[in-house]
Image 1 (cartoon, rainbow, N blue to C red):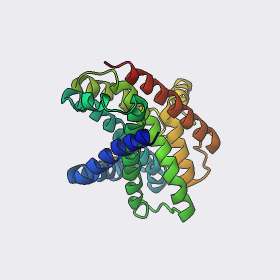
Image 2: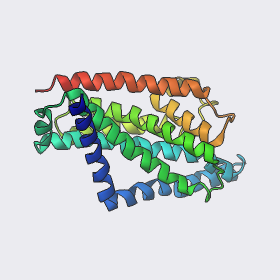
Image 3: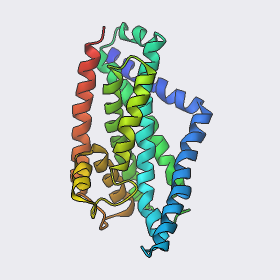
Amino acid sequence: MRKEFLGVYTIWLRDVKKFFRDRPRIIGSIAQPALFLFVLGSGLASSFKLFGGGGGQEFLTFMFPGIISMTVLFTAFFNAMSIVWDREFGFLKEVLVSPISRTSIVIGKNLGGSTVAMIQGLIILAFAPVIKVKLSLISFFKLIPATFLAAMAISSFGIALAARLKSMQAFQVLTNFILMPMFFLSGALFPIINAPQWLNFVARINPLSYSVDMLRTIILGKTITQMHPLYIDILVTVGVIVVLSSVGIVLFNKQD
């Protein structure tokens, strides 16, 4: 058992160290969400003003938790890409023949990717005072486990995909095919409440919607855009983690 815990810790530590040693990656993880928030967000907010749709500040406030979700989504999913990278360069084969179970490998990768995504998501909170989002100390401490859960759900999904893909090109194609629709149909950038019925249905079967709703509820409190009670968001997110982690473990155990 101690050997398995050590294996999980080593794989987790590798991913965390890679993140902190990659300064361009850290800078990029801040620059991209800032671009979405202040350029895209300000542009959309001004459009609402132009067509008489309320104040721009309210839209930026609404959009802020969605930007955090976007950061967590892309970071956690792209961290799973390292599995494909390691397979191409032969490192994964060395890990698979190590004296730890493949379940521990999946858990270590999941925890490592989730930790990095959580850190990047929490860094975006530095923009909260700029757009006048008031965040209490209690809300901040609630956000830590909530962001980690959201990251773990997406990381589990990425690992399950990476377990079967053999090339970086295939992973990147699936990223564009899966991630962007998941993000845009999650309610991160616009409220789903008054959306067309088909869009509302798609949002409710999109697992990312529950993570976005969870983070928005913690940051902004109960609003008219809240899709579900907080406990429903948490239960669904945990359920996604359990199911997709189990799938990832099964697929990894089938690898040669």
